[in-house]
Length: 477
Image 1 (cartoon, helix red, strand yellow):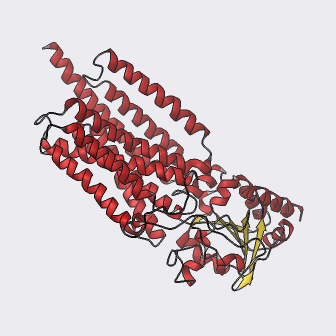
Image 2: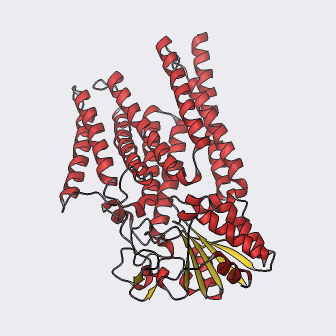
Image 3: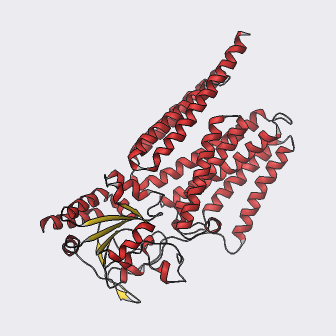
């Protein structure tokens, strides 16, 4: 009687802890809507997750046997030893890769849970059908997310080519459909109570793994931010499904939050690129292509180079300057130098604003995070729809490594792969200065006519060093 009472008390305590945990997760995520509250929100969500983990470890039956205790301790130690140093050492430019790989780990964990549940506990009639369905759904989607995230990591880290890698003709589509059918049929057979469950659970995991690879490989580098967001939604949905199967409240709530937010973000980013999610999954564009060398010519004009001193004069005597940052700023870690330039210009009475494109960089909010790190006031950041009307009143726009999101071909060239994508209309400015290392193309792998516009000047070199030289010249005027 006493043991039963303790069991129920422990169960009630666990449920109460889960409620506190997902309440903190929701409240913490609310703080991520702005840079001033983001750090605090992240810490609050981390406390919620710590409570959820502690509550799970206190669930009756978890600490069953010495081997279980050892495995839990080893898992916590390994996870901490890998996760903490990785998070502390990761560069801001590599943050998208880290997000991709950490997201994939979540999907992989869900797939492993399904494997363990069916390997150790499956008997015909052991699981209710509802539990089996959710467990197998989590196995399929989690496995797709894990392997797809690995490919996304490889493309972002440039371990794999950024260009689409696909089979010729329609064979890619037929292969993907075949793999999906194998996974679904295996799940149906398991739900029907077939005794040889090991064969079919392996069929699910192997087919889903191959499907995750084959779905992401044909997607080009320019679409990777959308893919990361989509795979993040997949991981959330698989975790929520597994939470239903295991009757784990916090997994259900946290998984649905991640799934819903990832889905919304995916749609917003796809709309910002004027592309549908099915079109992206069907195979995108992107990858390195040859580009004209510095000083080269293109139909419509030649590239005009400039110097830091000339750029400083233009900026110092301008009324309004707009800075359009991109991945080039992230690579050069030039955000602090840009902040110093902004201060130098403002001391001379120049109005400075930042133009932020929704998909600038390699992940959503990449530029916002970099600029917040440099203490750039948030009210100086303007989203694309707000800043575009300002360009016609702007004297100088300083483009720092933002290739594809400033490409006028999206408006003027119907044959371009990015035609129709909303862009930062920097070409409407009176003058444009582009900071680049070379004339290499952006992540979409296409040339940018902006570089050949007569009112555009190119300042070649490392962005951080170039901005520092410009700032010194402005201060010397």
